Image (cartoon, rainbow, N blue to C red; front, side, top):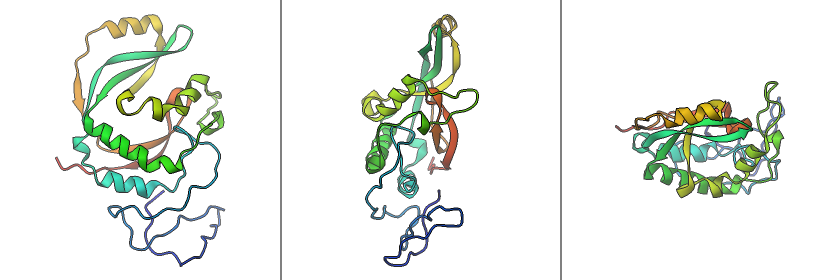
Length: 212
């Protein structure tokens, strides 16, 4: 997916390519830093990943938003290690990260911009499944369905997933001292989610602006 550039013929529908995909609509004079152009009404589509179905022609909206942000101002602080139980005696561990206010502001603007393109009722077919993990557990489906209302803004629990371990081992690891670390990212990426909400398949990355 890349930002649309060039010009589309007035009122002429896009023709499918040889591969059977429709090309993205072109808007006169748009580029990555221009205001978002007017968009067509969201179509009907099957459920997809990440809190519902995301219509793929939103990348120029995201690029405009990313271009307006100095990524070095989006500060996060790693605070410790925690886990969630995913199977009897097994937990999924993560480094818990406290987001700064600029991160939450960016998140809110992104959620608002994508609202018209979000659906609900996603099934396991909307996630990445592999031979090693052919099923998507119920906890993952429930989490994806409610992640925006229940896990954004003041409820946002930023984290970096590090892997699975026994609950006994995790209790020992989490009891150890943890030195806080403040950092900011060097880019922003979108992933297709797999089981336990893991970033299973990269879809697109942006090298965001850094003024500092």
